[in-house]
Length: 333
Image (cartoon, rainbow, N blue to C red; front, side, top):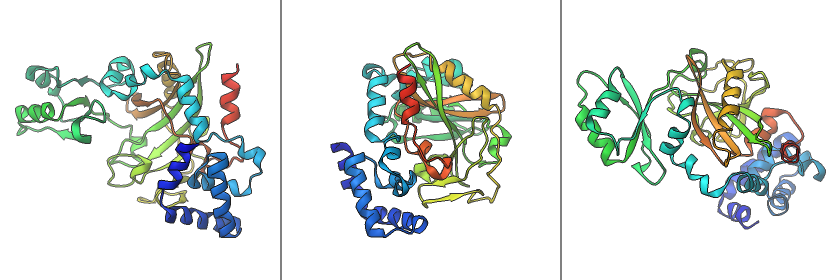
């Protein structure tokens, strides 16, 4: 309880009020009542004010509110299904790449252990590659594309990578259909899997994340938008922006119609995640970020603590109940 209470204390009250006003706009209920109900939900249901809006709690009786995965239940899933001593295999991106290299669809190189000749061989035939820290404690948070041409000084680049403790990956050539969503970012599909006690992998849900024009990433925290995909990989409901607290049926940057968009290789992406879910069985609850390349799906990274708000967002699901019963059904099988 203290965790969600601390979260409430540290968040901006203006943001809370903005969400209350948004709820008032569609519910026509008194804003003061909404703020009081939000506070009650934070303390009783452990659901934050943003989730209160996303889950449409203002119109829900307690029995329906109880169907939602909240902060505490999300932590329960994380701690119960994912063994603590194996979490680092996902947080350390080099370790992750080594374990899941079969599913990456690209090569990579640990610069700290690689000679200059190894790096030179890695660069051969490439005009761009991606570099990033192995973990959040190194590399000063650097994530960037390195572009190569005839004038590139590979020795200088190699020393830069060494100094900042970065490793390198081959770039992903995004499928042209996915690039239509936003050409400046890899627009990933988030697929969440749950491994039951019989080691059968279940796909719990899939989200489409979309970057804005000019953005190099599709992250919601960076202004990107998202929606829940249908079982056959289509966008059938509006996309949501946490930044603007609103929905979009057209891309906010380009005006592209989003409803009806179909993810290529979607079935293959789900099967890929189900296979990957069985590789490291000490981590049973994972959110896989999947890029759709010209050759098919490939894993960008895995997250052992997937978010719980996006797949339960009423604005992108049009559902009045949450996902908790679906998790409990599989856990009790």
